[in-house]
Length: 181
Image (cartoon, rainbow, N blue to C red; front, side, top):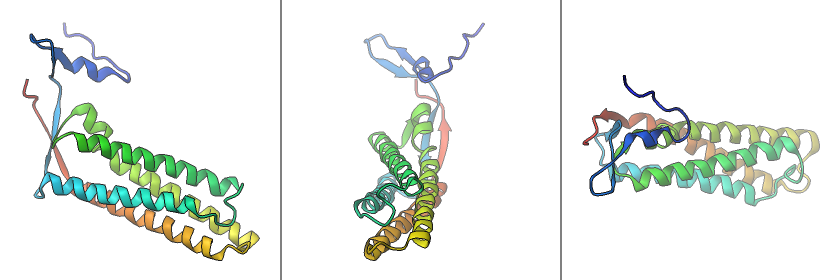
């Protein structure tokens, strides 16, 4: 009988087998990037999108728009969007240290997760922007009109970059290949 497949956070460790020299060899499913574009250019473009998203989200938090000093419907979506943007940067870091061939667990956590995380940042920035606009509609600008405009602009830019990243990730094709070992 075959051994039961492990489930859980560290289930991928069962795909690593000990070699005679003491090292480990990956025996699970691999994914490789198959695109007409060079993999270095793909990574560069992905970093450009992710860097712009992160910079816009951080810049939106560096200004103090009206309602940012205690309104939960303004702060909560922004903080969640910032944490998701950090998660997006982390996924991109993991993708960058690997080559165009990824183990299954790395593929699931990076190439497959990046568009989902970009959509999460997009949705949270839309909610944050909506909360900011609702606050201004009911309470006015509080002499922070320029801060309001800067915050709206940076959040809108982050939304545009998230959409661009999501669309670009859909053009990159990944194919599963048998493991070399």
